[in-house]
Length: 313
Image 1 (cartoon, rainbow, N blue to C red):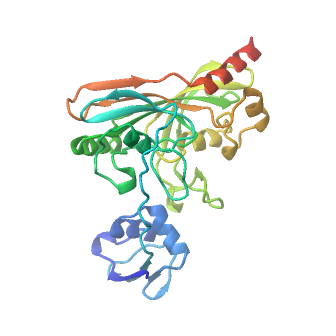
Image 2 (image 1 turned 60 degrees about the vertical axis):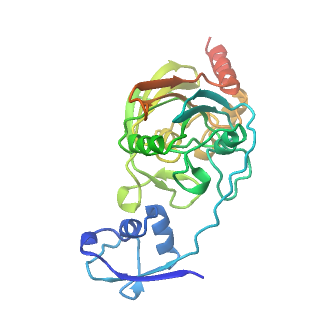
Image 3 (image 1 turned 90 degrees about the horizontal axis):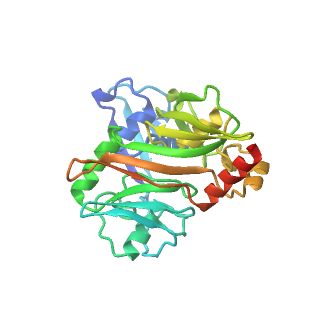
């Protein structure tokens, strides 16, 4: 049965947007709060609610919370092609192959990093939700490269803080269509759920639910039809690089979800976006020493680069 909650708006939420206020009150995401409002599960002073309306202290909120989803079980499963780059008592750094999710989730039945580590006998931090224990950041299923997973509870807490305070260096290699102008730049544009297609993301104004997102890029090699970029993330939103590059009209090659040309993808032999997490740097959570890990592009992406270079010769 749904969980019915009735409570007054506290003084500290005076003037706050409804979706942001709900997120703070109940501890879920702003996106989830907006979904509840859209579904008619929220009323303010007995009337219909809108996610962007401003709250008044003392107003009465009625919220119908759905039953929490059943936890997704972590199934130990050997992951073909997943490489252990580094492991010690506190962290394990993996090079994630394509087609592998960071952790289990509803609707995903394929391999996961967490399942692969469990199958290999690694002990992972018990902090975090049951299905994503130890996971402090994620990569898309179709994005390859470096991920760090916490093994100790101290490491989990300190790594989460490092990501939150943006002290982790996250560098990606990306091949994008065309030639960004300028060749070196920054995309500073908030990202939120796509207004029509809730299965993807888009540049969305903050007042409409977008969250601050900053991507720095530099062209390192230009081809006739595409460019190889070195990208550094200042924030870490879902699909951030893919959304920002698409917004520049230079989507990642092979990224059909965000507007890439399928003809180029076919010519390059790509079945996913050309995007690879090539460098990860942070202060080791136990020693405080700065550690940096690097990963070269996997064979499918390296092949696409060879084709581009041959075409441009």
